[in-house]
Image 1 (cartoon, rainbow, N blue to C red):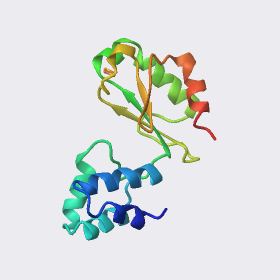
Image 2: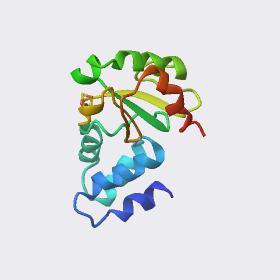
Image 3: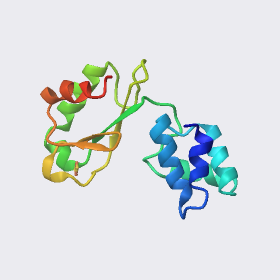
Image 4: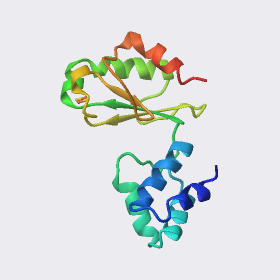
Length: 148
Ligand code: FES
């Protein structure tokens, strides 16, 4: 579905711009400039305001990035439980560093704050889906699910 049609779907929804950005980002993995401009037009707000929304929330990215966004919790409980080893395994498996995307455009690695799942640390999310009690050994198996 093209981004204009996605945005238009939320035209009459309260808080529609957030829903629209969520839906577009699900398709494209980030919010390109033309998406922000189209949202400003559809929701009848200044482009600067639409850009402000896109950059205010950490869940949105205005930079191009890999399709599957892996976020690693870096809050204290996950850190203590071994998030560093998980980070090292992810970087090794994907051949990139935190904050980067793979050249095939398949994965992006980002940090996040606590995602509210501290009972099963360390936690990572991939496209918002949480994975619990992650260890370095589990990383290849988790990535394999998204490599198709
Ligand atoms: S500290 Fe990582 S999920 Fe809460």
